[in-house]
Image 1 (cartoon, one colour):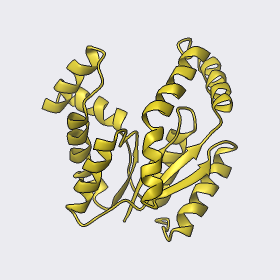
Image 2: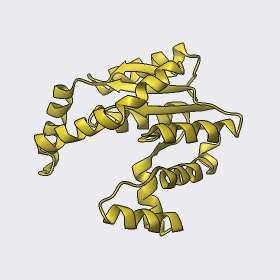
Image 3: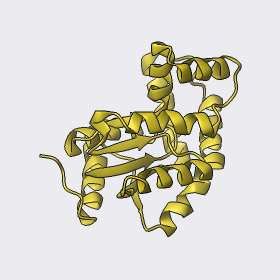
Length: 195
């Protein structure tokens, strides 16, 4: 059983690395954005609530996000472990997740922080935007998302550092090199791949 979180600024490669970790450790990669979209698509009662909030341009409150994540972690594929991306984002969400896991006699194994220089990430995302023809990914928009991450998520990092869960990995470089750094850091904690 491997229970992990992955955090890092937008463009640090969380999605790419999450997919690799998911495959290596045989655990589902669970992104909160995907949970929101799936519930909205399935028109679940929570999904209907989320859609109304998102359509109004507001943030989904902790209480609702917590319920959606809790429901997802109760699904069969997540019983033996998971990798969360995009959650928790607030101190209240950290407390909720800790309590949820403790109620099942579980706890997190590690929190992977992908460190990446802001200017390098901006350049990476600008290149990706040009390759994919994404006109909305202006440098200004990318830098704004970096600022939001710094303001909202960075305060959670010391909490995980104090709990002794934080693994800091250089998120820049070739995909395989970053994946190898993550695997090495997890292995040093006694976490083994599924293969």
